[in-house]
Length: 242
Image (cartoon, rainbow, N blue to C red; front, side):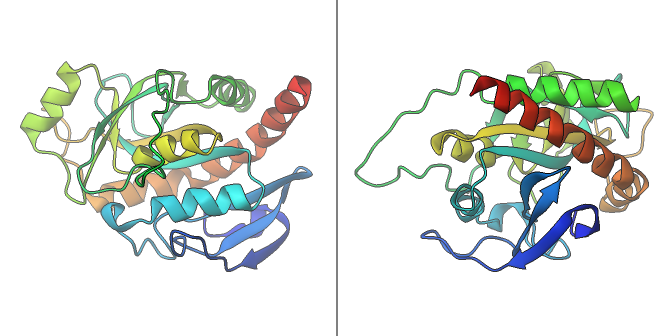
C-alpha cells in the first residue's frame, strides 16, 4: 500500500497531531473521483512494530484530513479450516488481547464510556461483499478477530484457546484502531486477508514472517483491486444517507 500509483492526482503530506506524529506521511488523492487518504500504520518499509504504532496520532490525522470512513487493510492468521490463505475476511466483532497500548482519547478528566456492541461498520462490510462478488474474490462476510499484543506470534495453546472462544482470525493491529475510530465518530471496517493458519493446525506449517510476506506479495494486486472497486460503492452508499 506504500505504492501510490493506483491513486489519481496524489500528493504526499507530512502532518503532526496533538498526540505526536503519525506512522507515515499521508498520501492524499482520489480513487474514481472519491477523495482518499492513505496512511501506512507500520511506517515506511514496515519499520514500526505493533506495540509502538502511534494509533491515536494515526486515527486523529485521518479525521483532521477529512476522512469519514476508515477501510483498514490487515494481514491475519486463520483460526478456521475454511478460511484459507488468500481469502478476504470482513470481521464484525473483536476480542482485545492487547496489553501495552493506549486505547482511548479520553484518558484525562473528561471520562467517556463509548458503546462498542457492534464495533465495525455494517454498511462498509456490505459494500465489501458487493465488491468481492463483482470481482469474483473469495471472502467471509463476518467473523471475530482477536488482536494480540505481538510482536511475537501465539503459542499453540493460545491459538487453540482462541479457537475455543469462537475467534475466526488473529492479528496485531485492529485494536485499538477500531476503538479510537468509534471515539472520533468515524466508520471503520477491517479488510483482512488470511495469510496462514497461525499454529493450531496439525497439518500446516507454523506461521513465519516469510510466509506472511509471500502470501501478501502474491495477493497485493487483489487488495488494490478490491479497494478500487469498493471505494465508489461506499461513497454512493454514503450519499444516499444524506
